[in-house]
Length: 69
Image (cartoon, rainbow, N blue to C red; front, side, top):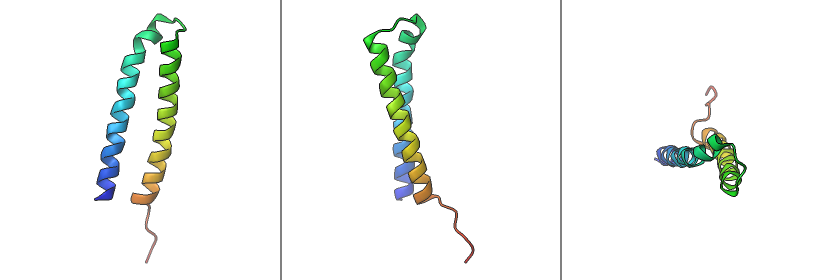
């Protein structure tokens, strides 16, 4: 049950990151260095790094390979 909750939260988190990219994309297309672009990119980079760490921890905790025996 906890593994399913973890997977669901990871999915919601990923959707948040995707919506962040959707919000920042017009700023990237303009190629103008604005405060919105810098703050948005920092938020996305930190959020993506934290997501990768949480993914690694969750995979080790909930889907670790069981050895023989």
